[in-house]
Length: 247
Length: 292
Image 1 (cartoon, rainbow over the protein chains, first blue to last red):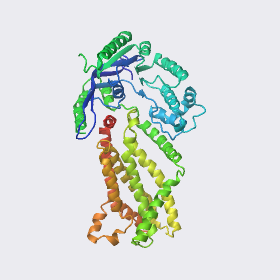
Image 2 (image 1 turned 90 degrees about the vertical axis):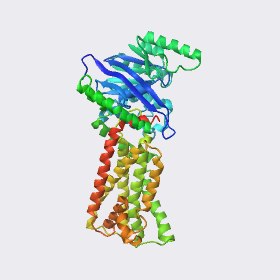
Image 3 (image 1 turned 180 degrees about the horizontal axis):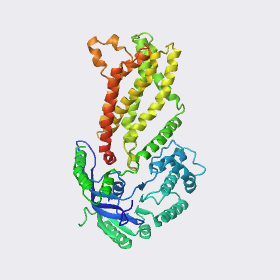
Image 4 (image 1 turned 60 degrees about the vertical axis):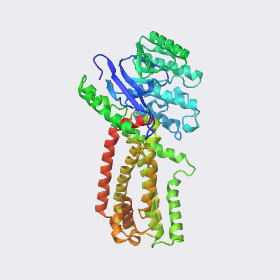
C-alpha cells in the first residue's frame, strides 16, 4: 500500500473556494485555499500554523475527503486517514459507553475493536464511575476527556489532530499531552494543528505556515515558527490584518 | 446557491484531469472516493447507530415507547370528534375507517418530516467524518419503520378488539407495508437531499404534507364524496391509493390493487435510484453547504 518514496499523502496545487451566504442576496466568495502543495511521509510529524481563519481546518477536511478540492489533486497512498476531532457523533441521551462505541466506529473501528478498547479508553478518560450514565449528565470537561481518549486510541495511517491538546483539568491535560506526544513520537504520521508554538517546535519535523489560504513558508520548525511570530508582532503593530500578504 | 452549483461544475474537468493524468491510475482513482467509511463499515455503524437511537429516543421522554401509540390515538380521537360527531360525516364503522387512514398517513408524514431535517441536524458530524449522506435519511426511515411496526401491531389488536374479522387477504399486508416503506424512503431521500441545497423548501414541504393529508381521504371515503370522473385523479396520489388499499384489505377482506402497488413501488425505486446518484454526485457539497 505504501508508496516507493515513503509518501503517504501528496497535495498538488490544491484550491478550495466557498461562498458565504446563499440566495439572491448572494454571498462573498472566499478562496479558503490557494495553490497548496506539499507531501507527508511515513512517520513524519507535520505542523500547521497560521492565524484563525487562515484555512487550517479547511485543509484538514480536504485531506480527509470531507471537502473535495475545487482545483488541484489530493493523492492518498494510505487506507485510513482520520481527522481526530472531539466528540464525533455524540448523542447526549446515550450512555457514555454507547457514545464511546459509536464514536470509535465513526472514526473507522469495527464494533468488536471498539468494545475491546472500551475499558482502556474509559480508564484513560478516568470516567469509570460515570460511563453508564447518559452523556447529558456529563460536564463539558468530562465529555471532552471521553472524546479525546477515543481519538487517542484510534488507528490511522495518517492522523490529523486539530487543536485538541488543551482538554480537561490541569492533571488530565498533562497526561493527555504526554500520551499524545508518545503517539506522535512513535511511527505514526501526524499532521498537527496547534497554536501552542513551543509544542509545535518540540513535536514537528516540519512546519507549514498558512496565511490567507496560501503557504507562506515551510520548513525547519524553529525558523518557520519564529518568522510567523515575528509576522504576528508586526501585524499587531499595524493594528489590522494584512490582506493577501506579499506573494 | 447558483454560485455553488457553478463551483461543482467547475470542479468536474479538474477531477477528470486528476483521474486520468498523474502518477499511477491506482493512486489517482483513490483520490475522489477515498472515504473514511467504506461500505462494510457504513452498515456496521448504521445498525449500531440504529439500535442506539431507538434506545435513546425512549429515554428522552417520560412515557417513552408509549408515545408511538399515543400519537395516532390522539389524532384519531380528534378526527373522530370533529368529523364523526360535529360534522357527522361518518361512514359505517367510522373509527376503524379512521384508524386505517390515520395510522398509515402519520407514518408517512412523520418520516418525511424527520428526513427533511436529517442532514441539517447532523451538520456537525458531516463536518467531522467523510460519510455517505445516504446514511442520515436511511437511518430515519429505518428507525421509524421499527416504531411503526409496534404501532401496526397495536392497530391490528385494536381492530380485532373492535370486531374486525381477520381475513385471508391479510397476508398481503406486509407487501403493502413494504411498498409504503419504499415510497417513504424515496420521498424522504428527495426531501433530505434537497433541503440543505435550498433551505426555503423546508416550508414548502410542510405545506405539501398538510395538503397531502387533506387529499388522501383519511377522514372521508372518496367513493362517497368525489365525482366519479375525479376519482381516478384522486388515486394518482400514492398516499391516497395506499390508504385505499389498506382499507380494501383490512375492512373488506379483499386483495389490494396489485397494479397500483407495482406502479407505486416502481416510482419509489426510480426516486431512490435518482437520489442515490444525486447523493453520490453532491456528497462533499453538503459539508461545504454547512459553511454557508
